Image (tube, rainbow, N blue to C red; front, side, top):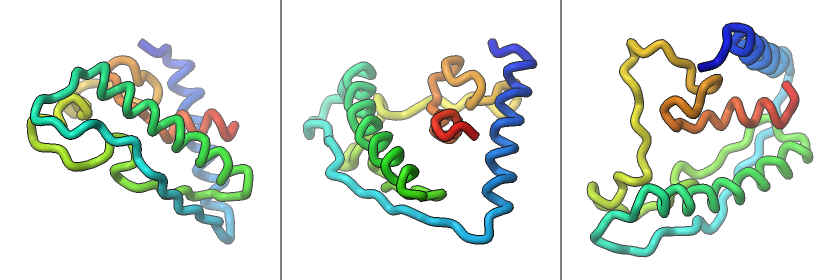
Length: 132
């Protein structure tokens, strides 16, 4: 579990990044789309490990594109909603690609303790990359 000082540090970083963005008079946006690496069409769900491997491949592509856009001055970067896991799933085959969301009563901040429920907080990862 994260210490209170690390939670405070993360909160301050996110707050400062947000304040810096709010203080800007204009924003530069980038829109990115790529050929998503898709899972094989199957009626049987893949293992969670296979799903994670595929999503990580797509995340690597997205991360590279986001870094390039940021270096070119983008403040807001839009990616497709299916860019991480792809599409064409049934109710059964999508399951390994989903995350469990804890009850709202759970005292937990995903961006400061992502391993607790294995939820990706891309905003926190990105703020660390940008140094905000």
